[in-house]
Length: 183
Image (cartoon, rainbow, N blue to C red; front, side, top):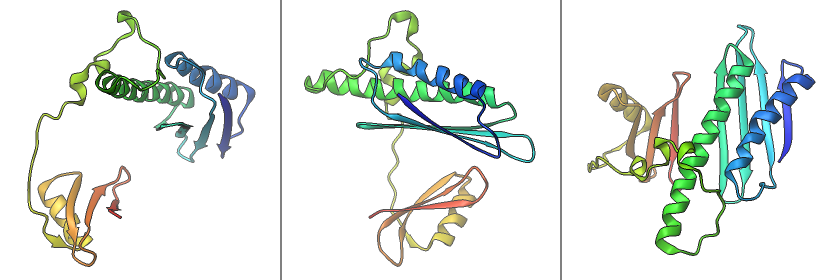
């Protein structure tokens, strides 16, 4: 893995660089061969002394991405590593299921010992436990946001009255709203 570490409002010291590389490099143990990819790490500090760490690892058939805001940058890097491990394990479970069904997918991940397994590795984590059906009412995004807030949900699916396509509005972590439009 190659590392591209950038700092915004912070100097990337050799100690920070070494810590990031050491922590992210531990993810290599999940792969049968070391992925030829560039790890993009963006470190930010804000005036209120909080730090934000963003890590993106583009690979064939998979993009690992995580971000974390924390008062301690080193703690944020640790939390990012945990998030990326969970993503890898979930993807590994999905790939292994397809391999069992089809039998022709190359092995990308190493097999974990029982001592390294977590509940995340179990197939039941990806099981659909509830299903809903409903008619999509044509409306604009403002009305969809009002409906979402009225229901107390964090997202709302609707048909855009102008385009007749399925759209989703969602509440962002910063309290504002996002819109996903189908193509």
